[in-house]
Image (cartoon, one colour):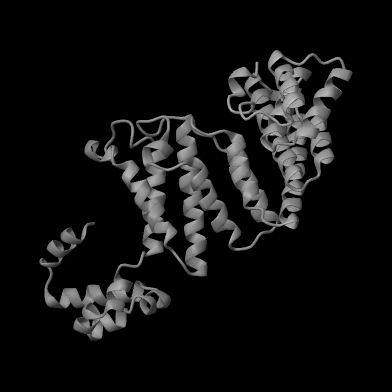
Length: 345
C-alpha cells in the first residue's frame, strides 16, 4: 500500500478506531525497531521528531524486515515469469520496471548496517544474484542478459555478495558457499566463468583462506564423483555428462588458479592434469597454456609446451607461433588469451 493510499484510508476511521489501530501496530513493532526509529519520540513529541535532523535521518533508514518481504515476493514473481508473460499478478505497465526495482533493491541493501540486519542484507543480495544468473539461462524477464539491463556487471555483484559474506568471518562453510555461488550459477553473455573465479580468489586475502578454498574444492570434486557413481547406471544422460564435466573442470580450474596465487606452480600443473576432464590432449594443453599465459609465467609456459612435444602431442599452429614468439621476445604476447574460446576447437 502506498502512503497516499494509507492517508486516504485513515480518513474513513473514527478517532477511537485510529487509537486502536496505532496501539495494535505499536505492539507488533519489535523493541529494537522502536528504539532505533525513535517511535516513542514520534508519539510523544511529533514536532520535535520531525524537526530533528537525526529524526529525519532515522525516518529514511531502510527497514530491512519490510524490504526482505518485498524482495522475496519480487523474486518469487520473477521465477514464475510474472514479469515476462501476461498474468493477473503484475500489471502489464509494471512488468518492464523490474530492472529499476532490482537496482533500487541493491542500493538499499548496500546501505544496511548492524550485525543481524547486515546478515539479512547479505542473504538477499545473494538471492538477487542467483535470480539474475538464472535469467541468463532461462527467460524470466524480457532480456537474455539481466545484468546488462540493470546496468551492473555480474563480476561486480558477485564481488559485493562475497565481500559481505566474508565480512562475517571466513570459515569452511562461508568459503564453500562462495565457491558454489561462483561455480553453480550461469555467467551472462559478457562474462566468463574464469572471471567469476578470479573475483572469488581476489577475496581470499590470506594463504589460510586460499588453503581452505582448495580443501573445499577437493571436497566438492569428491562429492561430484560419488554422485556420478551412484547415478551412472540409472538415469545418466548426455546433459548429465556435459554438466558434470563443466562443473568438474571449473572446480579444477579454480584449484589451479589458487595454487598459482600461492606460487605453488608444480602443484597447480599436476592438479590440472590429474583432474581436468578432456580426452583430447591437445585441447587440454591449450586450456592449460591459456591459463598460464594470464599470469605471464613464461618459463612455466615453455616447460609445459616442450613437455607436451615429448609426449608426442602436436600443438595447434597458434600455440607453435606463440612458442616461437616467446623464444624470440622473452615474453608472452598480450593477444594470446584474449580470444581463446573461438580458437579452442
